[in-house]
Length: 216
Image (cartoon, rainbow, N blue to C red; front, side, top):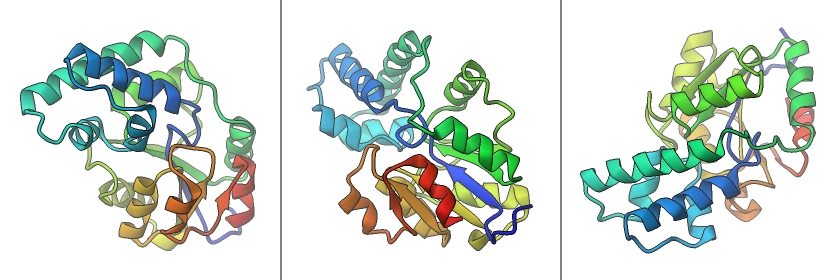
């Protein structure tokens, strides 16, 4: 294990590791059109990235019925899968930094609003299935910002919150970490603005992914 007090590093996926924000927002807009709903603006669609799909739909369309939510989720997933045959690129320095952290024997995990099928698909496509020691997805546990994802990962590795750090690009990531009493690192290049992220008092808000190493 590393000499640092941090043993486990938990990453959000979309907007933190993967440059997928634009693709997600566009698929949300397309799905809204499929159901004759007013298409959210790019900023509105971007704003809900990080939530589970059901929670995201209800935030955009709070009066949607259960049937509409299910139908919207189906069409969104279809749009995304059609585009996901070519995985989104990772942000600069992500792969090198993950490899370095892995070599330094940190435990690495993912906590994401993606579905389990979606995460498994992209891990396989990017040859990263062995990079991460654990993961939690929104369709198998509670959506962010509820703390259950992080609590389950801590339990899996028998660690306390102060032995881990959550790395993310949205308020949902930061609030989830606050709700778990876990230290957190924000990245400035994702879905939410720096001002919004700083409200949750992260250890830092970094502009380059490789900078997270300085705060472990």
